[in-house]
Length: 116
Image (cartoon, rainbow, N blue to C red; front, side):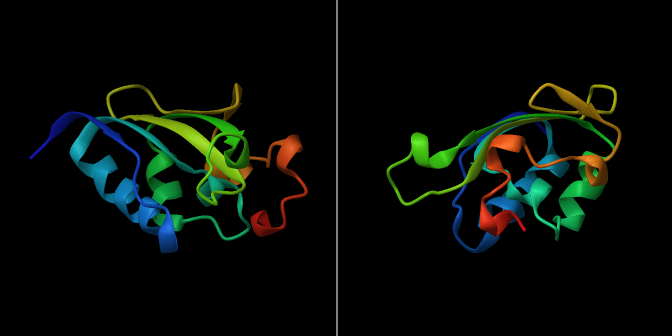
């Protein structure tokens, strides 16, 4: 089954959000999610997600989760948009990248220790 759109705010515990995103990218033309964006910025990027992202359109705007959520969510969050129908492009906070391995940690988050 293929979906046109999926809008989600998956559970964040134990990387579940990444597992949801990994599955949904395969079954939806367009995905919008609000979840931790650390899968792009940690030294150990989520290989399954980055391989998919390197082939599709992806746009992510990051923000500090502690400023908006009062549920113990800390660190780098992202409003993330994926589109399987558009030409490949990766845009993070307005900056364009060819591949996920080229993405840099946003300067305002450089001191967050769990990103390392």
